[in-house]
Amino acid sequence: MTASLPQTPSFRLDGKRCIVTGAGRGIGLAAGAALADAGALVTLVARTAAEIEAAAARIGRNAIAATLDVSDLAAVSAFFESREPFHVLVNNAGTNRPMPMWDVSEADYDAVLSLNLKSAFFVAQASARRMIETQTAGSLIHMGSQMGHVGGPNRSLYCASKWGLEGMNKAFALDLAQHGIRSNTIAPTFIETPLTRPMFEDEGFTANVLARIKLGRIGKVEDLMGAVLFLATDASALVTGTSLVVDGGWTAD
Image 1 (cartoon, rainbow, N blue to C red):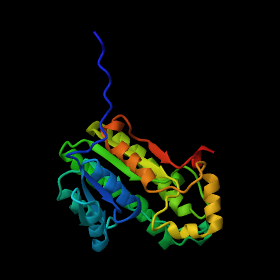
Image 2 (spheres, helix red, strand yellow):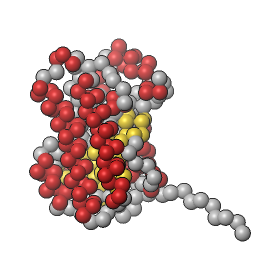
Image 3 (cartoon, one colour):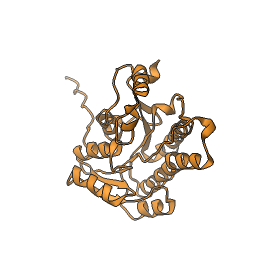
Image 4 (cartoon, rainbow, N blue to C red):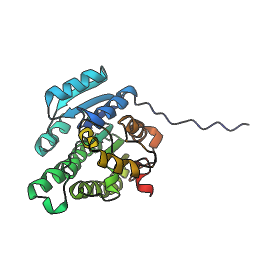
């Protein structure tokens, strides 16, 4: 008798509900498009109504827009409590204020750490609570950075937030495993987006970045879409508490 051939796990998300924060443009919009292409019903979240509605229109029938300021923790809690549980969260909202550490003010610190770490924590908490309450298994995906694995000049605030995200993620994975909820990060290198594009107008900066990315090019949002799908689907059913580093070899050196 011939043993049955192993079946490749599905990369489809038909019938699944997914949510992406910071989804109006750039990485968040690409993540939403990837999930929708895989058959999921995707809720795109941002604090600017016009931007997020335009994003949902670009993706089409599998996407709906929701206006939410993820720094408003009471609003975050109410948002998740009022909806069916999501199977997948892409925790993507974030910011950056590059500067030497000696120039950082308390206001700078609060702006970056509050959004990148505090808001990410409580968005994940609200999503997970609803999943646990309804016995919904799923996947939390936090958008980290290679700067959560290494340091960088003028990146003290960003590194602090992204290293914190990595530790948070590992602890989440341990807490949530018993509920069938996985937690992982994606850690990209420099990705060309509307936010980062002005940085690459500096030839010296771009040359330095390209010297560190061993594959020899700046990342594109498309480079992250497969990573999002992998961590969202049954293809990664045994993956939790880790970081998928998409950095073209930056951290391998």
